[in-house]
Image 1 (cartoon, rainbow, N blue to C red):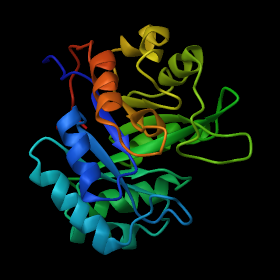
Image 2: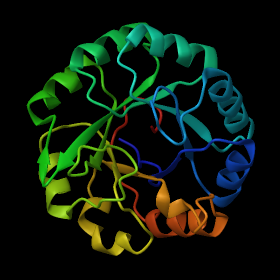
Image 3: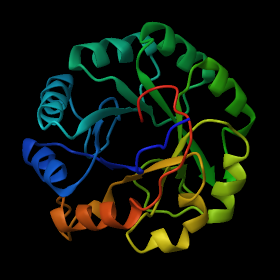
Length: 238
């Protein structure tokens, strides 16, 4: 058993090369690239996904994560291969069978499944075990809006709800939803959890005009990279 790396900082929603430059210089570890998110403000056609993924890898410090609502595992696997992306975040309600098919198609990929929480209840709770058995590597816990919106809602999960949900599975997890540098102090028990391994942010990494802000990203990195845990990881740190 070895000491795990400091928690990962993933910033979601890059759409241009300058976004990649800002995030890499400011301390982000992962960049979320949207593809197959109909109507999403940061949704990228495959050509741009491929170009930005290459730009992220070229920084030597930033790894791309394909964030998607796609429900066709063959189409998603094909897009990931062509873009050279090995981390995929399933940010919708894809069933365990989808994860199993994707795992068969991409045996070496890191598969991140979002668990959606609304009013303290995890909508995928009955399927958590099935997601683990299907080949999920990492869960991302995120808040769902009352109107059903998922992703970049800015809504914060109660620490007690996160800790209770974490008892339902055995995998490492990331936390999303209304995260700021100041919220680190209010999430001490989550940050100290032995399987917590990162945060996923969007709005908190931007300025008032909606652009990625280096100071904001650096503040997030400094606030949340305070805990290391002696936990085993079956793959490279997600």
